[in-house]
Image (cartoon, rainbow, N blue to C red; front, top):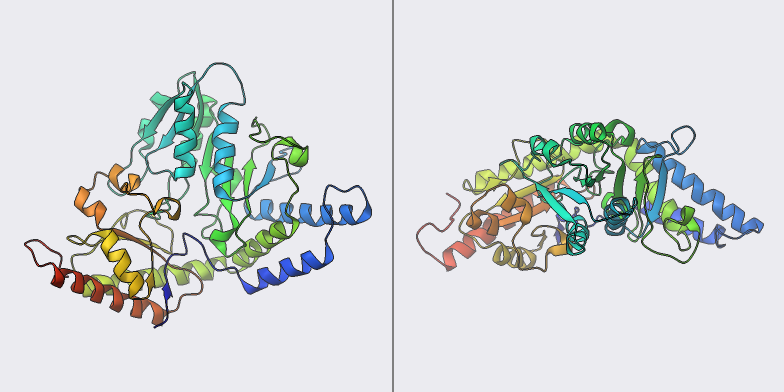
Length: 395
């Protein structure tokens, strides 16, 4: 039995073309890009070319007069930490206030909680029943001590796309920088940093078939930020350490490939997700799809199976050859139920029965149909083994 991989939001397989581009880079550019000799200068040109390509595709301008900046990081988690902690504390002075949404990834929540432990205030924007951030709650929170607002562009569990342009407009009018975690959005939907109006944006290459181990933080030219690490003057001193030239090349290659196929890829992912949900609903009429009435990423489906424990189903599906997840990969080992789904005011039983399925470019229609069959069979097997009033049986 072959495994059907439906966990692309956690990590997508690196494209062969990307691997080839990185292999060429390793062979042709072995020098440290900080070197002042000719091999180092050649490596520097390759690195900066990759930086420029990524910035251009994502709507950032690294040239005057805008002078946006793109800082390479080890991934989305580091980029989010650098944004939350670095921007919030850049001005110095006494502790202030940070505002995040209730649906943020742990790599935003935990840095904000770290500030809370240091005497800062943390306010949280609620979510609607469909998982959309309540923008009307933001203006009263932008007091003089507000230093940063952080709201993700697309939720990692539900796929719901958030109104970042609206939130950024509110923040810009108040003079408060807004950071958006675009880790799940970049390389899946069109992202225009300038049009969004955000002060900072995070992304990670392995979410769009690039190599794991590299991400980036894009900063608007006027945004101040304090480094979190020290030990060199790399990347204007904001993130010291030798820049990973081959990883940057791989990241740029993956983003370029996606960009060329963007519209066709989005249509294909949306059609497969709709096929998956329609067939799952036919087999299991009681299934609930979270955020289905909101604008979503084309490849994400978060489904609840009332009466079935999500952890039990996750194990059963793994044994049945379907790879999926509960919540984000970074917190899937935690016992705490999804903060995103809790914030949507869903019943605890529904939250506890929820599974995330995320499709990718390597999936086929035949896999989708077979996955539905295996999921339905697993649900029925679990229900039959534990008969009780109200247990989900697919009807």
